[in-house]
Every structure is written in structure tokens, then in C-alpha cells.
Amino acid sequence: MASISRRLSSFFTIPYFGLLSDRYGRRKWYMLGCLLMLLFAFPYFLLLNTGNPVLIILGIVLSLAVFHSFVYGPQAALISERFSTRLRYSGASIGYQLAAPFAGGLAPLIAAVLLETFKGSYVPVALYIIILAAFSFIATLGLKEMAHVDISD
Image (cartoon, rainbow, N blue to C red; front, side, top):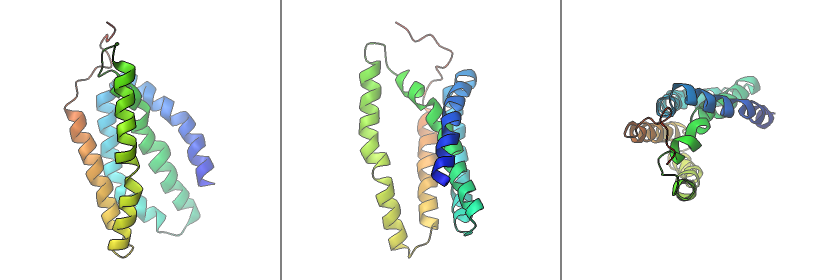
């Protein structure tokens, strides 16, 4: 049920948040999404640990269909506009391909090790999410806003 709810809502939220980032600026929107993820790390686990199916689904839908979509919607444009038209496709693709195994692929393993090491406590995993969100926020600070800039050559 949670998977269907998340996918259905993401079907709408990812393009919507991409559209909003076009209007308000991708850099600003992405940083706001990172901040929201950072703030939701502990409430997320609190919702999951209630044992209440409605609150668990709410936590999953909020985390993935809202907060994840908040950054995922503008991400493709945010990354690709960093490159000239001659390098745009390759540059964005290399960035995605290198980030996938190191950032996305290792995250579940790191979370599992943290859970095992700290006897099932979610606190270290929540702190891990906060650190990654803060790192993403800080990295995005160094980017120039290009949502309203002509980047064609």
C-alpha cells in the first residue's frame, strides 16, 4: 500500500517540484529540499516506530513523495546546466553514474551497519541522513543559480 501511494504521489510531485524550481530557482529549491530532509530525519523514524499503519504510510509518503521529490524534481536541470551544450549530456551522465554506486548504493549498507552497531537504534541512521542533507545543502551553496539564465551556446 505504501509503495503504491508513494509511486502515485511521486508521479505528480516530481514534475511539480521541477516546475516550481523553474519558477523560483533550482538552487534555492534544492537547498530548501535538503533543509526539509534534514528536519524530517527524526520525525520520519518516530512515525515509523509508532506501529500505526496510517502513520507509517504517512512517514513513507512524506519522505519519498514529498521530501525526496523536492530535490529530485529539479536535480536533472540543476546538474545538466553546469555544463556547456557540448559536454552537457556526458557531464551529467558521468555525475549520475559515479554518484549512484557511491552515494545511493552505499547508503543502505551504511544504514544497516549503523543499526547493527548501535543495537537497532535509529538515532545514528537519522544523524547519517542529517549529515548527508547538510553536506548536499553546503555543496549547493557553491553553485550559481542558472534557472533564469540562457545557457544555450
